[in-house]
Image 1 (cartoon, rainbow, N blue to C red):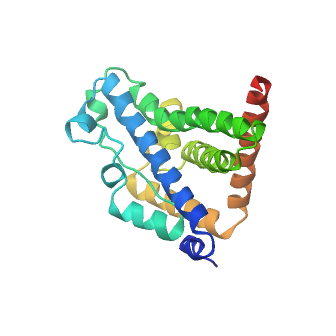
Image 2: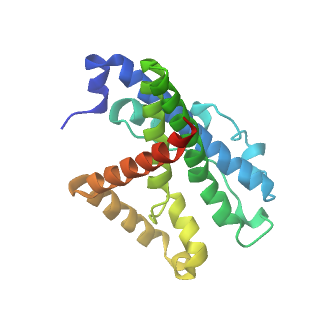
Image 3: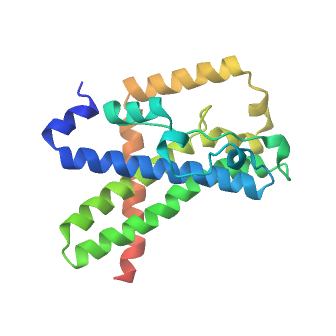
Length: 208
């Protein structure tokens, strides 16, 4: 098994590119959570300084270290559902994060197509990494797994999910991570991400 950080010594440019794009995309994701919560009446994230693009704040040291070593990371923003205006606000705030990544993926898809049209390889490579990172964040975070945005979105439509205890949620999370790690589910996830990427490129290729 190879660690992500090994790429720093084999292909440092790609390594740095992935780290920067992932950190940027996660910050956009978390900023969108805070912004959506603010619009729904909860200013907790704003008051505590989490409405920012600073990765040290919205990701934290442990997440950044995990990104540098293993190639994956996470973000965090404080949300107080009791301060929100509507009963569906929590689901919207949760969905806002993945939605921001899907919207950002449009930007990278267009940049990739521009780079390809004008044969600017550097822009094409950066855009392709950005497209993959954002589609991955969008798709992965919509999975109905505890601690992910998808759980909070689905529990709005399936009230029984709200009654799942924290102990059981942690168990489900552990099982899900284990399955992704030791089975071919991670391959399936990668296939879905690449399929969505292909759709983006096909849809926006009509512009060029």
